[in-house]
Image (cartoon, rainbow, N blue to C red; front, side):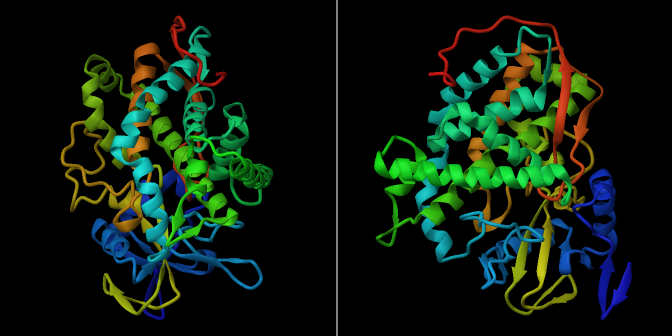
Length: 418
């Protein structure tokens, strides 16, 4: 650590392979030595690493803005990623009140607990059908063959998009989250994202011409203060729902399946008593933090953790680090599946707390339960679980190869093929 203009400067590159491999150790050191630090990466930004500092900043949305805009040259500015993502806003995540209020008023009922409860039969049917497709093989990629298709299919069903097209949506979202910038994989994913945005525009036009019983039609028929939503906003909303529904949940599930493979006693307990999974879900969320961090922009002079932050400066709040803060969590690096209470930050804090948290929990519990019931002896091969090389956006696994005792398909009405 060095001092530059009284700023404590640290080497912190959340996109690097070194960070992906040593994030827990790096963030522990930040919490203990420099909880408000300055990184020179990506034009410079503050790094917040303790639970108290992360939650303080995220609850103060007036001082720490999530809003994103595009300048006169079409370049993205601010928002919740560092650097800001190209081409789209994540709406409503990258908005502030009063704009945020209207979007959340429309979407909150769609993802409320009662609405998600009605989706649980669909989640179970999709999960059953996808596992049916691999259960007789005795080997599987838990990410590419199970988790990705299930989460994508459910999300596309909610939006009202063709289920058969799920690879075109899930593939680029998955690839762009772990591929280092500048690699061929990243460039392919960028092209895939552009294709997704085009598909959204086509679907919106079709839904405007013929309303249906799905989320896209619901959003088209909604308004904010009497004004209907334009196509650009609808595309941004669709992308938020897709990205939130697919790879973050995929990251959490992948980490959970690897952990349970490495801790067979814990797996056996969940198999014997599935009711334990409800509380265990929160511990998996805390320890594996599928969304490791979120960015903000300072809007007014503020002192935080003994440092002076100035308007226009960028801030990265480390959810994963906050979740391992010993000031809040006893034995923070231990996985305690019965930990309660569990006030983790994995769904965010404040007004921007994850819109889809109820849906994510429901998908997670159903998928974990069904894999443990139908593939109870799954084993992950040596070297078959490939971690992301970059965890700047999501922490998870590229692939997880596993083998298991083959089983029989279960009767289920096809959701995927009608």
